[in-house]
Image (tube, rainbow, N blue to C red; front, side, top):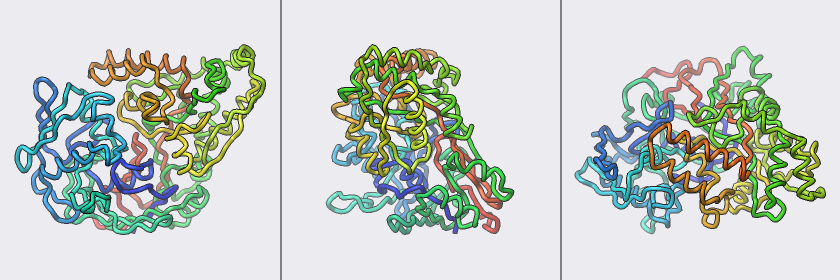
Length: 496
């Protein structure tokens, strides 16, 4: 049995409902949709083997691969695709990504129809160039095709019956999650590519151990109690680099770490105060210290590795302590405390909060640290109940999805910190064109507007850094920062 530590328990198994990064990682081994992401973040067919798009761009017709079966042995047909997507589109499901498909943030899926047992069509109310990218989103469960037995007769959630290389065989909350390789899995042929191809489950059993403390995870790795340590904290990097039987595997991620700023708070409603906080932070020094030189400074919500990312050099000009002091003086700031909320589950979020506090103190800002349990911080984020929030956003395939993390209807989604109408118009425009040059212009303007309004203070783009014991082969870091264990084997594991 291959064993892997998790920083905390998952939040649930209902795709795209009550999720976080750990939940997404686990469910990615269980769920599959019509499309998935290649290694470079572009979408590709997964459960489908053919796609036709109508000339007007409003009808997508998928042909399913033949011979696919669910974890319960039942065949995969267009009927289950229709059932799954109609369920996602039902507001009662509380699907995280409903707004991407109901017309709120772009095109609306008007209908999902079975043409024949292996053909299904999606009809949109307008063209949507990012439709496949949105469908494949890992945070949404990848638009997983589910068997209807995944829910009870009353519609309540039971368990995920999908088509992925593994199925969950046991979940002991707070202790571990066991997975068993799905004997009926049919991987797409070809070299490993994202979460689409080469997904052979070589290891028959996976056990994900809930080990919240970073030093305990490291000790388990050193003792051989776990085979891989995902999400290596910067504090452990020096020690790991000295170990002969452990190697580091890393790749730039499409995520972003920073500080969310709640301007609906009376104190932070003053733009000058928000600007002063942003100008007080030396992002390059912070990124170096928090990540042990594994990540770049990044003032944007869009990752540096994205084709729409900004240069790390732009962070240098945004550090201006003298300007921060002048802004505080102009605002009449008298040392009122500002609470910066963080957590200890993610060391980077905790450590960046400490450095932001220390840097802000140098210009006269009185920032107090509030440390919460991760689940409590997530609840506070969703409700918008904070002043400053130390946070990290999961990897997003497209820059529009990154901006959606903070930008939108703030009354409907209180966790968003930016509701500017012009910015929202630009975001909608970015999702309606596939022209790279045009999109670069749009995202450049959005970045400038974000720097002006300060709803989010970008700090750095993280790296997906993992520690691997000798004898483990096939493991690769990914720009989505999800530890993948298909195609991975230990010495002694049969090749087939």
